[in-house]
Length: 87
Figure 1 (cartoon, helix red, strand yellow):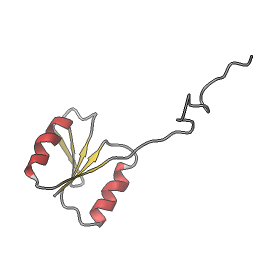
Figure 2 (cartoon, one colour; figure 1 turned 45 degrees about the vertical axis):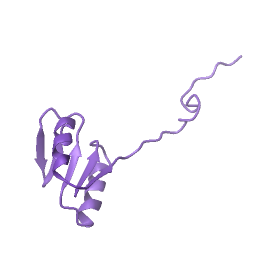
Figure 3 (tube, one colour; figure 1 turned 60 degrees about the vertical axis):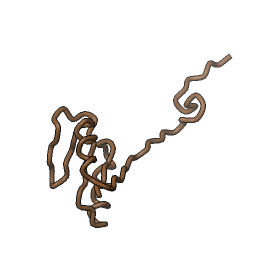
């Protein structure tokens, strides 16, 4: 089984910690800005998208993790960020 974290952001370290605490053995982070095939840091592989596709073929079970972002005012025209005309 391999656990794949999609994207390298501020939540990645929290996700890695949670996976390690639960006993995950193979954790990789798909780093969309990675120009190299694979970089190892603290026993975690940070990989490019193309390498991730090849790497996950080695496993029977693949778990994906992704964090989502929401900002105030995302509904409609982003009302908290949208300047309205005063007529």
